[in-house]
Length: 170
Image (cartoon, rainbow, N blue to C red; front, side, top):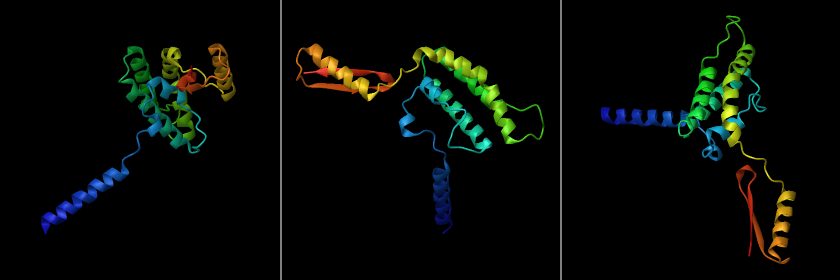
């Protein structure tokens, strides 16, 4: 009986740990690089209103950027993301001992500016281009048909992230 109770408690404990573990990343964000995650970093998110939650969101996003940068081959990206993480984690309001969450959030935003500048400098070359509009896509397909010399040619245009598009005519 004692073994059965021990096993039940272990199973319940495992279920609690599994269900309470925070979600690390949205599935669509799993393949993004550190620079792409940095490009999505929003210091003023619209869906969150509480200053304490915004600060937690910023720290979590910076932690994701740093975690992703560990697999990056570029030392500059790793160093810049570490500087950003260090600034986010060590941000402290020295102005007042009993200041509110609004002041802590403002201090956090100010403290991570140097790390953000460093990240933007190393990621600038890697920044994705703008997305192609549907009108530009239709124009590109039309030009490819004309260049193929066959107005009725069957052309297919595929768009990729970062504004890239390829048109293939048969």
